[in-house]
Image (cartoon, one colour):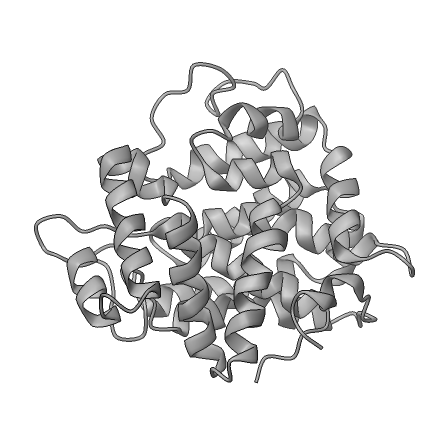
Length: 289
């Protein structure tokens, strides 16, 4: 079964399978040698590979099937951020938590004949102001890089709209927010296709995940880089990723340019989208070799 066709499938979830799939998606993402990101060979000054693995392990129980079925998306986000704070000293996985919560809620509540994508859209359509309040508080607590001040729906103030409406207002400047607005178009339309192509080319799972990251970076600027260093820099990184995809630049050179001591560029939002794509594939029954 390939990644694209798998969006039509509906594997039966045991009580502990969802927990394990969440953990596996996180560990696979951070363990792949993706340029510019934390990897087993590259820590950041405030976050280490070990921090990321610990955060992955604690997310599993938060997103276990029974809790995902009974809890709201906002509650899952709040609990995910709280659990992470107990094991890591910095914001390690806020983007992953935000992207995973609707996916696991959809997987835990979908009907027998319902595929993951329509179940995710249904979950997003049901988000309310309480979800926004819980998510706002969690985001403010995590203090993500480049958060800044928002002209509307600032996470430091009580929400007046649903979580999906708040995310839609930020979609132009944040790819995670745009996923809420578009029903995970990046994950389902681009990410799964890229992962499928890489696996069909015979790549190992770690190499396929690196290929997925490069493909996503080449398709759109990373919004964490854009928020922290400007849109022009983010576009330059996207152009460089396109060169890697076309074989005009090596992975090693691209990685070194992102890790420059003078201007570290972490494509962190893309890493979160990679993790969400891997989770969507696992939830759809794709077996990663």
